[in-house]
Length: 250
Image 1 (tube, rainbow, N blue to C red):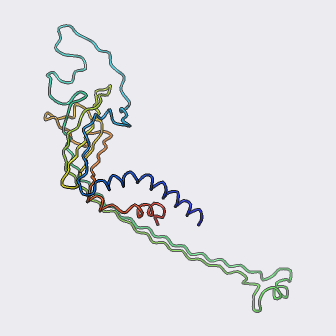
Image 2 (cartoon, rainbow, N blue to C red):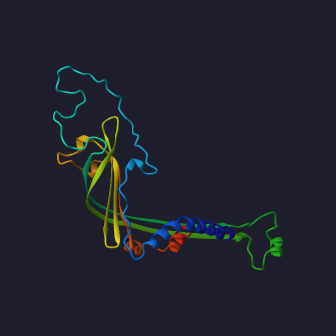
Image 3 (tube, rainbow, N blue to C red):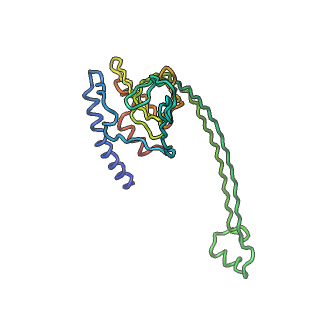
């Protein structure tokens, strides 16, 4: 019990230090709309790391004089689709996921153990009577039984649908021609700020003639759609409740 109290105190101290800054910023926003983030260079953000993925072996470049075709070119005419760092393209996000799982497990077990000592060099008679209470029988000294039964059921029914469009910026060109993209969009309505972020790697060939690409063609996609504000604060459990759920989830 003492160890649990010490653990609770340590986690409470750590949680207080970690949430102090977040709580202070929320308190500062009381009575006003959340501040929107400024436009920043993604590569200048703290913690930004260029993407490194396995690349094919580079092919030698051959130049042919007076030729209109360049080795490695993927199009004969120049188009306006995103192709280099700083270009912009539109990402269509249309997620309609539905999952339904149901399982049931049952287990039962019954054990019975009996042990006796009808004959043991004549000691089962008078000797046992002096040791055991009156009426004890040497033929049934031990009688154990156990019965276990478990019945578990679980189900998951999830239905998600998201329809969004966001403009993304090409932040890096990989050696094989693939593009690293990053998009960030904030929309504030009254006192609630909706935040949409997307990161991933795409192929230039998957970009349509309208300079758009669908989300399912983004490799290593990271899509985040959330927000902050008065409604979000009301929907979140209190800090004390969150800390209690972490320490004692059951």
